[in-house]
Image 1 (tube, rainbow, N blue to C red):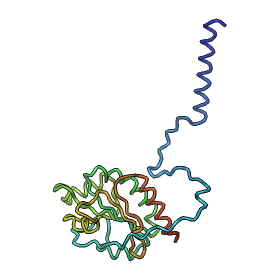
Image 2 (image 1 turned 90 degrees about the vertical axis):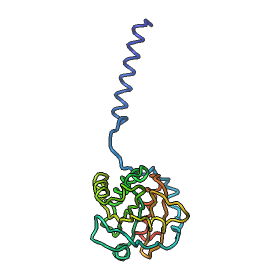
Image 3 (image 1 turned 135 degrees about the vertical axis):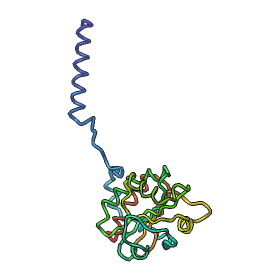
Image 4 (image 1 turned 60 degrees about the vertical axis):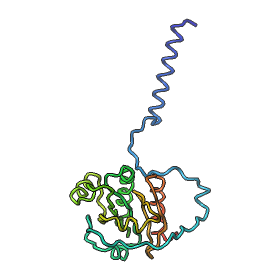
Length: 207
């Protein structure tokens, strides 16, 4: 077969392949949720799930320098008014904390009207992070619209975390009895997907 004809056939085959890929949605630019889950195994989904562990009783939030984004003034009142509470220790200049904020925002939007409250306990690492105007500006830029407790002296940061060192970020899932049911350290999104699943389990009474 002449070389020119072979070349023409190759071009035709390549063109047909490109059309097929496009028709089947090979270039999908759809923006997905950061918490999008992987497909589940149907067999595993039918198996009974183990109860969520009880990891201890949640502490209190005391000696705060105030609250932002809420009219509530005490942690006790927030616990009393909600079925589930998520408490996350963070600070606005922390890169690892920033990595979790989109996930926190998605969970807040999904569950804020279902008896779930989110509290970002802002515990500054550096002096400039302790300035309230800086916190307000950063929260606005980062899209943190859920309640913020100002833990300027980091008393609560250390009280809630064992050992000498604490973590930014660290999130606790708390049930209606004030019990900690998930303790999430670091910025792994898998942990925040699990947090969303466990919030739903608590709301469904399946925990």
